[in-house]
Image 1 (cartoon, rainbow, N blue to C red):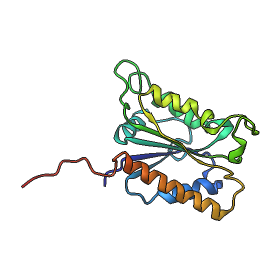
Image 2: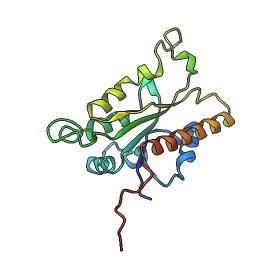
Image 3: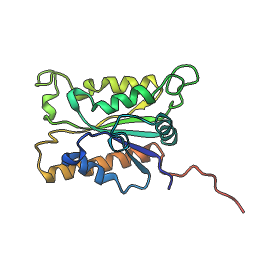
Image 4: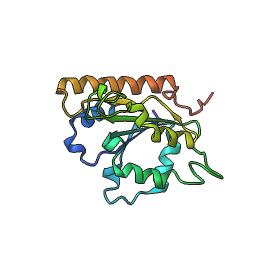
Length: 191
């Protein structure tokens, strides 16, 4: 099967993140998912823009899996956005080549869900804090889909992390099916 889902894994200390490891393991065997570990590919931050743009064009669903650092993402994802989502490619004259593609943030947050409310410690919902990603997707003509969020990623039990990883797999799988990404669009030759 042709890969139809691009997973951009963006975690600077992935080997220390049980939650992100479990999430990756839960979907790694889905034959329609291509894993692109940005910190593995670009430890020096010298991003191969053409490679990344080609990957985006080949995959109608793009997942950005990352920890929710300072209500945002690790710095390499910001660098990736600044360089890859360029004028003439993702927007502007000759751009919007990603129009109709889909954007999904899959994040791990250290705090509890109820801390992401107007009354909670973080004062805003996670969805509100993810608005810059939503607006970036919209600006590029992409469809921003409901994010996957694992709360309390640093403190919940291993069994709870495993359950969340299964929830992640189920979400990605159901999303791929609902977007009709699982059928190869290669023409069938007739005799």
